Image (cartoon, rainbow, N blue to C red; front, side):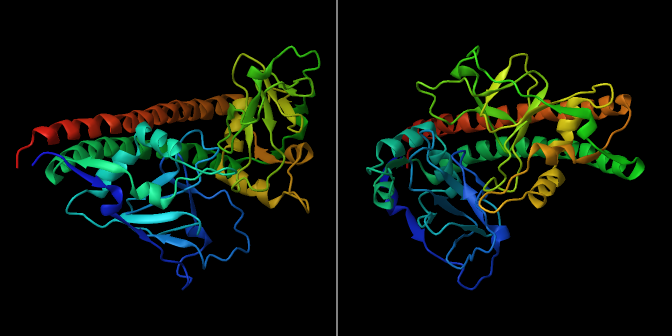
Length: 380
């Protein structure tokens, strides 16, 4: 039988089912990442009607046509769950209409290849905003091996995913142990404001000791990340220095997906952050360990606390004075160190988990190539 060439438009069809009956709520709204996943939306959904939002059913895909400013990747995801998902009305939903020719999971493997990202970017058009529209999408040529060959390579991919999901489940259980430990402490010992144990750090990079390579942003995952700002010909004089074991945070809590952007610099090198980001450190490490405090900041409950206690009209903020008023249980140093040991184990496994995810993604082009080569030699 060998390989058969098709246009993608022959295999897929658009879906435009809206939430007009209001069956789903804002809790079902998701964004789409360039990592090819549905993610929690970063949009402020307060008071937003979802009647015009599109529904993504089980076994359906969705993608964002706008490819500008996405790091040379296209945002696309596949709903492999039984849950229905709501997405923005400007996103495109589609499904496989020729299941006799291509498996949805095989098509998703095809989309997850770096080659597809490059193709979609190269074939995006527009002046103010480049898009990879539906017509271009449907014009993609794809060579397909027989279904049984597709299934063989999908099974390999699914086995890898299953192993990864088992690892991820154990990871979340470890995090639950840490959260439960802190909840027990909240019930067993008095809570205290952290103000007496921290101090503001105001060190500017006035002499430009550090260059733009030290500038970092802060993500809502509580990490320092590479800055997204344009640093060409940028003076770093006004930037704040974050020394080792100091914290920095973004006081603006609006449009952050209900998550607070704060991070602890655990590296040996100083970091530069925006002048509007407050920096502070623990002033009494014999009473409070920075990693223990960071662990508390990393909890979902703290994100909710920050959003509830943010104030402002045009822009809601959570400032350093609000940080000082945060109350936490502060056990003995020995107990703090014990909790940190468990948490550090969680962080290490989390990093391994991210590497596993990347390795699985990197397997997609290898599996697709293998299926094509096997399909070539398959006789009908």
